[in-house]
Every structure is written in structure tokens, then in C-alpha cells.
Length: 253
Image 1 (cartoon, rainbow, N blue to C red):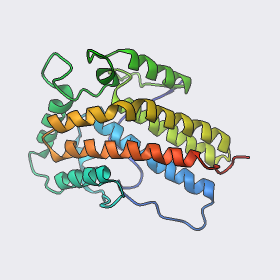
Image 2: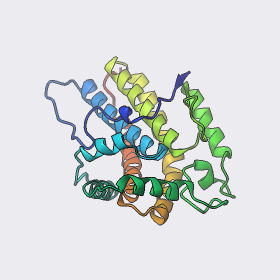
Image 3: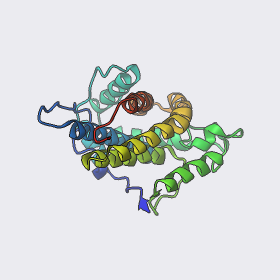
């Protein structure tokens, strides 16, 4: 099985965050769409990394040096970028400590029930008693295995952690791009359809509740912005996939 990629700062998008897709008149439709899907996958990869663990020095520096759009057409995405860029433009000697404390406050909590933090697991938000390792975990594991994807052996969290669900979307996006580049529109459609289904039945179905809790617990603009950015992105991406699948893809006969 293909394992989930290790989540490190080096896995960030090759282009700076927020860089616009430049139209290239010489690109054929398949190559242009594949490039768009790879940029989409890179955004999922970055979101996955930010939910996976605390920001480190290298990632903070990379994000500080990136450019952020201010008018994407989605209010939540725009607010997310604004909050994150505002935090990054005001870095000081204690910024790293603030982020570490806020990550722990937001996602780890100090209580013993399911209401003491924004616990980043689908099971917590879909089980009656807000417990981990419930039915949602089993369902996403089935989907991962169906697509020959397994978690990294070093991963110690539940498979329904939002970081893995976002990473699954990144992997599927890159697979769809590769299929288009190989001229196989039929395979690309199957992959994109599975991505849309996973988004609709899993991430979009439960993650907005997590993001609402993040607004309750997060104190920094960085993690408040992450909540807005992630919510806006998964919702607009689902609509993007639905619109894309309603048309013929390059390479389909």
C-alpha cells in the first residue's frame, strides 16, 4: 500500500502559498487542469500539516515569506488569509511560544471529556458521546484501504484525524492530476468523484463543527484564521469538484 507522506515543512507547495495560477496559452486543457489540481492538492497538504502538529521555525519562516490573496471570492477564505497574514506580519520574540500554547489549548485541551477543546477527530463530532475511535474511524479506514492508501507507520493518532482526511484529499488530487497528464480522463473522473464523495460525506459533514470550536478556544489570529481558511476551502472545493465532474474531462472518450 502507498503510505501517507510524512508531514514535514518540506512537503509544502513548491510555489509560495497564495500564488495565483497563471494562464499559459501553450498549455493544453489536460495539462492546465492537472496543474490546477496539483495546486489544490498543495493547499490540502499545507492545511493537513497545520492541523497535524505545532508550527516549527522553518514552517513559520516559509509562511512569513509567502504571499496571500485578499479577494478570492469566498468570505471565509479571505478572512482566513487576512487573520493568518496579520499574525505573520506582527511576529515577535514570543510568537513561537504563543503558537505552541494556542495549539495545545485549541486541540489538546486539559479536560477529560469531549468538550474541553476542538478535538480534531471526526468521531468526536459524529458519535453521541463525543468519543474517539468510533464508527467514523472505521469508515475512513475502509475508504483509505479501498484506494490503497495507508497512514505513515509513525502516525500515532486516529485515522479520522482531520490532518489525515485533508492529506487523503491531497493524495487523491495528485493522483487525478497524474491521470490527466497520462491522457486517462476516465481514471481522473473516478478519482475526482471519490474525492468529492469523501469531502461531502466526511470533511464537509463534520469539520465545520470543529472549526466553530476552534473559534471558541483559539486565542491567536493564526489559528482563528486557520479555522476560517479551512472551512472556506473545503466548501468551495466541493463545489469546484461538482462543477468539474458535470463536464467532460480532458482525455475522456
